[in-house]
Amino acid sequence: MKLDPAGIAAVRTHLLGPDGASLIDYMFRLNTGGDVSAVSGDTRAASRDLGWTDAADQLTGIGSFAADSCREYVFWTERDRDLPFKGIGGLTREYFAGKAVVEVGAGMGANLMSLGATVTDLSGVEPLEIYSQMGGILREREGLAPVDVRTGSGEQIPFPDGRFDVVLCVTAHQYMDICPALKELARVLKPGGELIIIGGTLDRYVKDAMAAFPANLKAHVITVVNTLGYTALRRRIIPGRGAATTSRPIYPLPATMQRWMQQAGLQPKSPLLKVDTETIFQSKRTQQINQ
Ligand SMILES: C[S@@+](CC[C@H](N)C(=O)[O-])C[C@H]1O[C@@H](n2cnc3c(N)ncnc32)[C@H](O)[C@@H]1O
Image (cartoon, rainbow, N blue to C red):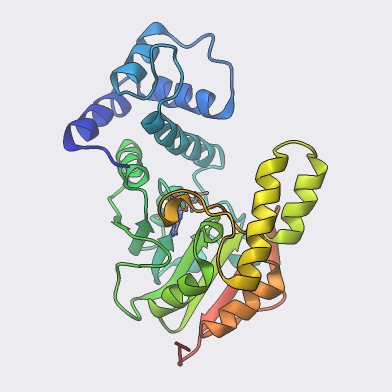
């Protein structure tokens, strides 16, 4: 999914214009189930003009991706434009200063926007071009310099071997074919470079699903079956339709992730730290990558 040049021009006109804030707020509300009763006719018309909502003011397919991007942008502004890790484990913006950093599964690039304040050699990888395109326009809205965000995935990273000091994955590893992806993430690290994966694990996922029982029961069962299936067979038993980007999530147990990291030539750091419900997996690339 991506915008054509005319689509990019239209989105820029709206998001960088005087009504950009209202349109972003409207998308945020539609995405998060907020109250839209006070949204003006002009803002609704702008959204329809972009094809983001239909005649019934419901999000369209492309509108859903645009709304995801606006939601992440609003969350980013609400956390003072900072990283979401709250400096846990010393992972402040300053931690990344002077390093060559790539975020894989960057989405619209909220973390890249934060890191741009301290990191000069900064890149991103994201499979869905619409997110990168929306992120580029939102960066422009913030007056931030562009970042080299390439279309790719955790399984296929369009950068050469040993390019980075740090590879960052924030709530994205669950969508990957994680075992080959770990080798690929290790490949683009310099020897001694660091992989930081922040995301959910099965123990926490099940706890949260039980607390919300019976909400989303079918989706939770699929996720657990896929996670156990992947752990045993290295494949999702109930795959999503389409390419890697639409794979259903898996949430391996912490010990399983650490074993797979070792198998990919990474030396995991212990003990594991947490940010809210997410676990921080830090590991270093050893000299030798096991193929
Ligand atoms: C929950 S979002 C997180 C975005 C961003 N890291 C953040 O923290 O705001 C997950 C992202 O992973 C991307 N993704 C899905 N499959 C992927 C894959 N196989 N490799 C890399 N990224 C993937 C999605 O397109 C999406 O942008």
